[in-house]
Amino acid sequence: MRMMLRITIPTEDGNRAIKDGSLPNLLEATVRKLKSEAAYFVAEGGLRSAMIFFDMQNASDIPGIVEPLFMGFNAEVDPPGGTEPRSP
Image (tube, rainbow, N blue to C red; front, side, top):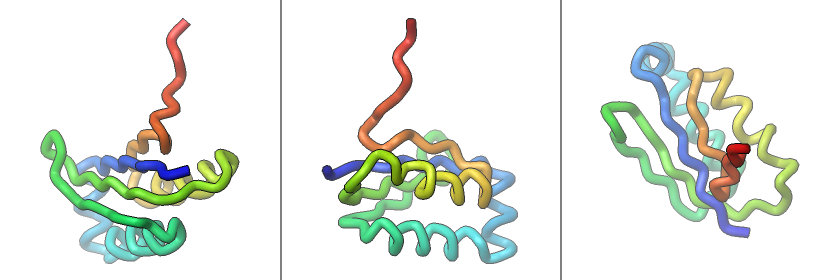
């Protein structure tokens, strides 16, 4: 199923990741791992953001996709497919 993964990187964490070289490396690795159809890198709300479009085979793949982004630059990640929790 085609999905979009939206990534937002806090400014300070993004600046650190650019300085130490990890930002392009981790984003490139994510795009490569997902075999993405398209990837867009933009400034959204004044923050570094990315939208990656890819084909997801199984929802159980989500933790393996997003965890490196959390750990690498404290990213906020919108779940693929917009599977946000519903409010009660």
